[in-house]
Amino acid sequence: MAVYLDNNATTALSEKVLEAMLPYMGQVTGNPSSVHRFGRLQKDAIEQARESVARLAGARAEQVVFTSGGTESNNLLLSGFCQKSKDARIAVSAVEHMSLLEPAQYLQPAADIIPVDANGRVNVAQLKQVVNEQTSLVSVMSANNETGVIQDLAPLIDFATEQGCFFHSDASQAAGKIALNFVESGLHAMTISAHKLYGPVGVGALILDKRLPMSKIQFGGSQEKNLRAGTENVPAIVGFGRAAELALAELQSTATHVRSLRDALEAGLKKFSSISIFAEQAERLPNTVQFGIEGFDGETMLMQLDRKAIAVSSGSACTSGKTEPSHVLKAMEVVDMLANSAIRVSFGKNNTMSDVEKLLTALTDIIEINQQSSVMMAATV
Ligand SMILES: Cc1ncc(COP(=O)(O)O)c(C=O)c1O
View 1 (cartoon, rainbow, N blue to C red):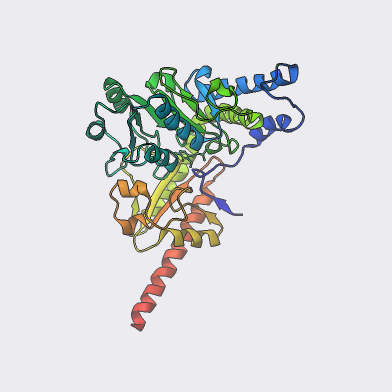
View 2 (tube, rainbow, N blue to C red):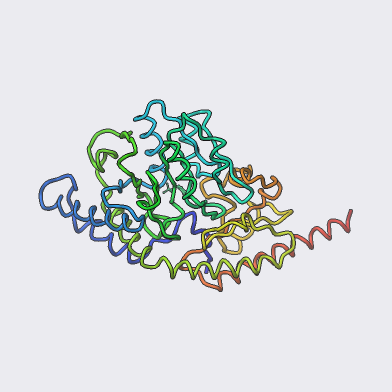
C-alpha cells in the first residue's frame, strides 16, 4: 500500500464529510437565492455550515464569507481591501504562501516584505522595520505550510493595531491543527481552506471583521454579503461545515496522534548524519517536519521515495516543479545547497507508526545506495 505523507498539500476527504455532501449532489435541488422551499433548504444548509466554520475559527457566523478556497480568500482580502482604500499600503511576511505574496506584489509592485528570523518567525522588531505611517494592512500567516512554524501573532497584532493597521492572517494550515480564536485574537481577517482539514477541494472562507474596509471584486450577484457574486457551491459548503465540526471535535486527539508520529520520525532522522531539521527550535504544527540532507537533491529524493510508493513534498506543493530553493527557506537564510535538499513530511489522522517506519527504512536504503555509489566512484577515479 502506498504511503501518503503530504497532508499539508491536501487531505483525503473524510467519509463522514462525503456522507453529508451526497444529498446535496442530486437528491436536494434548488438555488439558495430562490425564495421557494427548494431554495430555502439550500440556504439553510449554507447557514448551518457557516455556524460550524465560525465555531472552528472562533468567529461569529456573520463574519464568515464562503469562497472557493485559500487562494481566493487571500486574493479577495488583498484586492477587496486595496479597492476600497485607494491609498492602502500593505506589509506581508516573507514566508507567506504564494496565493498571498503574488497578489500583494501585483497590487503593490514594491510590496513591503516583513523579514523573518532563522526559525521563520516574525517578531515585533522586524515588523517595526517595515510598518510605517502609510501602512494600512499587515498580513502574517498563522502557520507555515512548509516548515509548520506557528507565528506568535498576539504581539504583532497589538503593535500593528496600535499603529492603526488592520491585520490579516492566513490560517489555511493552522485550521484543524491548532485552536483558533478569531474574535479574541483581535484579527480583522482570516483565511481558511476546507481541503486542508479533510473537507472538499474548492471551498474555503474569508473571515472578516466588519471594521475592515472591503469591496467586492467579482460582480453579478449579492451572494455572501455582497462580497462574492455567484451561485454558491452548496455541496462543498455543506462538506466544509461538516469537516469543520469534525476538526473541532477531534482537534486534541488528532494533534496528539500526529505529534507522536512526527516525534518518532524526527528521532529516527537524527540517526542519519548530515540531517538538518528546519525551524527545529520554533513552535511548529504537530504534523509537520521539513528537513534537508546534505548532498541530496530534494526533487530527486522525492522521486526516489515515490518509486518506493511513499509520497512526500520537496517544499510547498504549489511551488514544486520549480527547481530554485523555496522562498520560505531563503527568507530563513538557509544556504541554497541545504534548501535544495528540503523534504517536507506532513502527517494526517490516517497515518500510522508503520508509515513512519516505512519512510525511515526507505530513506536508509536511498542514503546507503548513494554512499556506496560515491565510494565506488571515488575508487575508480
Ligand atoms: C498557507 C496556505 N495558504 C493558502 C493555500 C491555498 O489554499 P487553496 O488550495 O484552498 O487555494 C495553501 C495551500 O497549499 C496554503 O498552504
